[in-house]
Length: 239
Ligand code: CA
Image (cartoon, rainbow, N blue to C red; front, side):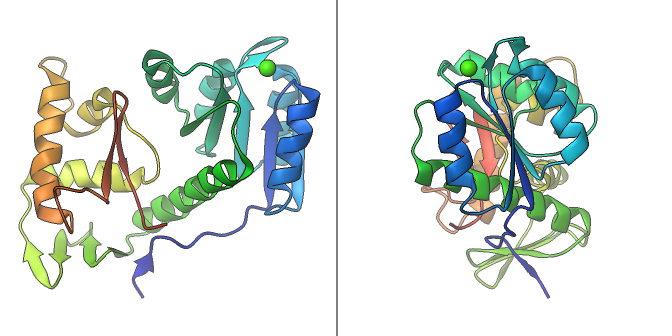
């Protein structure tokens, strides 16, 4: 059975790290609609402890905490686990976003955010977990009339086999394995090209364009490889 992107499982446990009492309660209430076991922490120290004890399926993380910056939690957790981390932030500059992506955060929400947006992002991350699991277990991925088989290196778009270059395969593989997560051009460069020199953002952009011509149902309006302006690229499934 091919794996269908777009499925997700409700999470068993979510950890919310937020020091603002009212916001923490609102977040807990919203996430309580899809998760029975919502844990909360209001400091970095509590968050470290709770993440280790509860082993949550997903973490929603405020950056400004009384005993430090949430970025530190991202860096420390990434050394240990692939748990999806959604950063809740008042910082909306592109530089801050890229720095957090490089630290290993999966997604951002700019405060204040609505309940439906929060749930959509959480589900996006849970789909990403499942998709990367499916990709790692060598399943076939079917999305929007495009079949992707990473193992036998086979792509069929609307019944037509597509030929990809080795670089395009490597790029597609990197994006699919991190589906739902925005990767910066530098991250893609490191994953695919493994070189220390060159104008990586132009290089990555050119190859993304080539890849889109072969795999997107409509390359002019990409739905599989999404551009996050100024930040990077994300492999996406249907909503
Ligand atoms: Ca705060």
